[in-house]
Structure formats: structure tokens, C-alpha cells
Image (cartoon, rainbow, N blue to C red; front, side, top):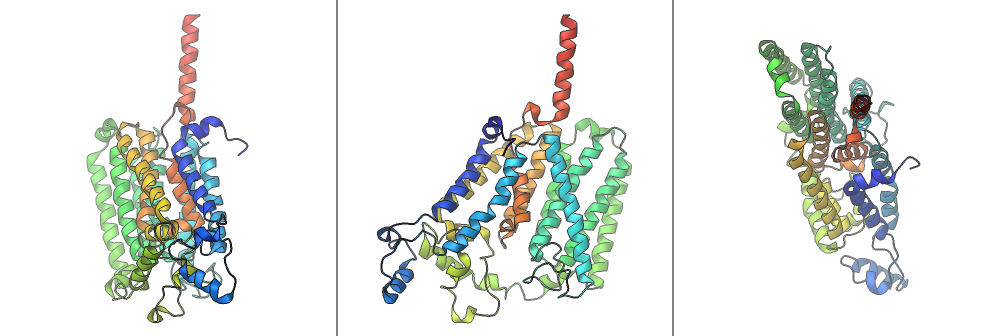
Length: 422
């Protein structure tokens, strides 16, 4: 905050305005309202009846049906908002370095996940009391969140190798080998992770990263490459990939395929609870039940057949839950985010190579969070929220001072002009 300047806010006004709108929405759900207002809000009739039966009478209440949960949601915004305010001050080079450092977290989490599979399912390597015991969850409590982080490793790896490729002394063959080794490492981690949505995200991330690398490469650089060596390298990588998948399946290590083949998808609690979630959304529409209030409010709509030792902490569809708890304002914020992303997609072609690669990497990270939110709640996890915040800042419009190298070149040109004038 001390280094934040006015130009940082004006140049990133769309991101700042969108973030501020989210903050205002959450705060507005905590403002006490007169009983004449909140009693007529949709879905509050059960609270009104409880007040009448217990003799509490009319009292001032906030819009949220579970204020303590909304307070928790408010404090959870601190991390992604702080990252946004910090990231908008970074140059393009510094932002690329920040994204590349995410790769270290991916490797650390993947190594921990392997160690978890080889250890006690209830041992100390699992960092949370409520978690997917026996699964490769890494630094997370949920295998789906670990899978999203692994899938994010594809664009981060592509960005890092592109930076190496920009150096003249870097061997193109070694870069392709490093890309194949990194990709195989991520794929192997996804296979043992067991997340079905993670498999989808991994495939999407790999395809989008490959397309971005072709879209961002310079035509001269593409013609200068040794095509025979390139096809031999990628062909060898494909053979290794087939061998890796076949070995994992034959040894029962490909947990994700096992979960896809059984009937677990049909019996998934998320699918069975979907009608109750839709009913909740309909009852509290258009203002919602309050940001972060899904778990306690959903219990009102649970039928006898749905009650079990396993509870629904979220709707496992963040798009649906956001509208159910935030109402129309939350839906408008989601639409605004889509508009920002779509606009940047159309401006992607007009950017230069390095800036196009950075913007495309951020776009892939946002799309992964979008896909993951269809069947889970990854963005509610601070680590994934930080990843989304970095991806959002990568979509900012390019500026001359975005890269220290650009500023240095311009400074040298100005010095030459002054020397010629003298």
C-alpha cells in the first residue's frame, strides 16, 4: 500500500473496480436492516417464524442469514485483494517471475502428494483434519484443488521455457526436452491424484498452452527451427506419454481412470444434492442468502435421505453457489468478469510476442479456475485465489514501462538522439 501510486490504479481501473465491487457486496450483506425490510426478503420466513415462536420479536438483522459466515468470507478476501494491489505494481518481467515461482509450489505440492501415497492415510503428511485421506492432495485438503494447481503447471512451465528460449544461447532442443519432462511429471501427478475434473483441466491446460506457444512464437523463429529434430522430440515425448499411461493403468496407479470407470459419478452426492441447491437459489432469489452462508442455509433444504455423516460445505458448483448466496449482484459481477476476459481475448492478437504470452498465461489460469468452479469451489481456497488474482492482473493493458528491458532500450535511444543533436 505504501508504494501504490495513482497511475497503478488508473491503468488497472477495471480490475480495481471489479475487486472493489466484490468487497462492497460482502460488506453490504453485513449492514443491519430494519425488521420491516429484512422480514420481506425472500427465504427469511423461517427466521421470522422462529422469532415469533421464541418471543424475540422484530429485531434489526443484516441481509445475510448467517452473518458470522459472511464475516469469514469478508476476511478471506484479504489475501487475493492484497495480491492484486501488489501485482499491479509489478513490471512485466517481475510479473513473469512471480508466475514462474508458482512452478516451485507445483513441484513442492506434487512431491508431498507422492509422499502421502507412500505413507499412512491418516499420518502427519496430511496437513488438514478434514481431507481426502489416502489421496494425493499435496498442500491442500481436497484432491480437486491439488489437481487445479497441477494443471496450472502447464502454462507456468510454458512461460518459463519461453523466457529461456528468448535467450540466444539457449539450445532449442534442450528446451523441448525440458518441456516434455515437465509435462510428463504433471501428467503422472494428475493420474495418481484421482480427480476427474482435474483430468479435464489438465487436458485443457495442455492444449491451451500448446496453442499459446504456437500463437506467440515469431514466424522467423518457427522457420529457423530444425523440423526433423522437432518432430523426433515430440514423437519421443508422445511415446513416453503412452508408456506412462499404460504403466499407470496396468499397475492400478491411475486412480483417476478407476474413478471414471465405476458408478461413483452417478452416485455422487454433488449430483444428488443439486435439486436442493436449485430450490435454495429459487427461494432466496433475487438478493441471495448472504455471501458465505451456503453451509448453514443449505441445511434447511436437506431432506431426510440427504442427511449423513458427510455434510455439504459448498454447492460444489461455485457459479451456482455465488448466485444463490449473492443474488443478482453476484451474477452481474460474474458477467462483468466474463466481459473483461472476453475483451482481453480479442485484444490478444494485437499484442507483441512477450506480452501476448504473459496475457495468454493469465487467461489460461482464469479459464482453469472457471472450469474447476463448475464442479468444486477452488477459488475459495486462498492459494487458488492468489493464482486467479495473478492471472487477472496478467490481463492488464500493456504499457511502455511494463518491462525494464523496454525502458532501457528507450533510454538508450534517447541518449543517442541527444548525442546526435549535440
